[in-house]
Length: 266
Image 1 (cartoon, rainbow, N blue to C red):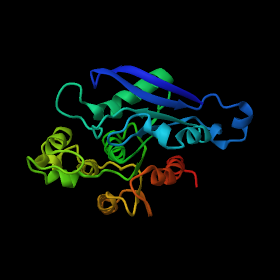
Image 2: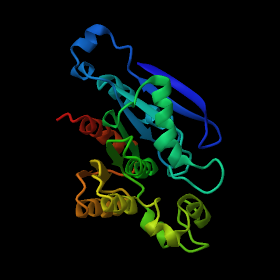
Image 3: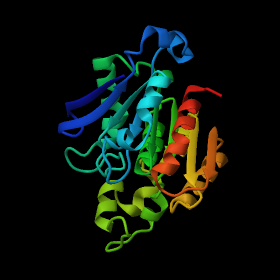
Image 4: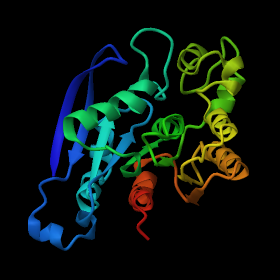
């Protein structure tokens, strides 16, 4: 297993940015011979961290290195800061374009992975779960499947915010800068529900989605609401709940099942 710590200049962000990449390209031949996942081309997963996190979170909090090796899965973990992986106003804040377009192009050019959407997936937790859903829906030409754990699906809350308001996480000015004018968010591309409806109006098939959330998670109702929305819209969905809060114990419970689902492994 190779671990690349990549620093490269991003056109979208107008600065050097960081991403980590796990590349299981050095497995011994005798191990590959008895692992059916190495009888196919390597797949690629873009994995997004949560609010206040960094590209190192999955390495330090989860077993992603083990799963990358086991499932012949390249895993790219970009830095998203606190952006919700959305394009925002102002130079150097096109985080959505970065993850949706530029990162994929860089992986293709430099490592010759993620060459086909059928072999490329996106996933994340909390803010990164929102980012995975939004990015996958906005860039279906690159991502064929999406998984989202304990997703920060807070669009409806942000829609109702007024100047001077906020919550225990951030203030109004932050949410307005990230999501855009709250009163316009319902029909904005920053709203995953709008993206689903827009794509369906164009006659497009929405790619399959896997979601999971803990029954004691403060984001449970948000996830249930989006689950119900996807079901109503006829999107292929696997949704799971079990006891758990917003922490690595829960996310580690579902990371491998999510990866197996991405790969179509029963």
